[in-house]
Image (cartoon, rainbow, N blue to C red):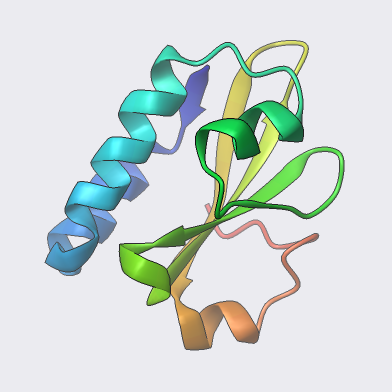
Length: 100
C-alpha cells in the first residue's frame, strides 16, 4: 500500500513517544501489504475495526491512541485521516473525519 500522510505519523510519534513502536509497526506492515478489503487489514491487525467499506480504525499504543485510515483498494492507497488520543477519538465522526 502507498501510505498518504506518513509525515503526520512521524510528527505524531515525535510528540507522543509511546506511539512510535506501534505506528512504525503499522507503517511497515501496511507499506508491504497488498490489502484488497477491510477483512485483509483485520487479518493482519486483529484489534482493528472495519468502520465501513473503506475506513478502518486502529488502536495505537494499547488503545490509548486511535488512528482512522481510509483505503482506496483499487489504487492500493491508505490515507491517514485521524490520529489522536482516545478522548479525541470519542469526539469525532470516524466515518467523516479528515484531519490531514
